[in-house]
Image 1 (spheres, rainbow, N blue to C red):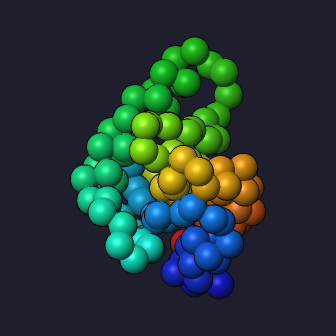
Image 2 (cartoon, rainbow, N blue to C red):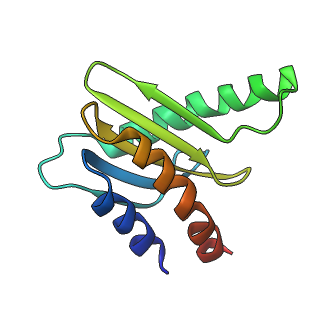
Length: 120
């Protein structure tokens, strides 16, 4: 399964999805899918969330609570669910607040293996 196929599967199976992205902690997008008419600046989102995730990852390492696996950030307009793939790469699902957030979390976890296989 290609990276695009994995992202497409997530986007199509989760109601309320606006976009899905695979990216590195340096803020560079590896692949992304955006739903039509989405007004999200994916490049800006990618860079800013990568910076935030680096800080969260650092904090988790300092407090020695285990490896970071998932982070979700909700705003008044969206929910962003981030699934850590490895030390260099993560995937994020950007959703409307009325979307199926639980299924989004599940699909990110389910497709993580396929994405990592394709990146290897």
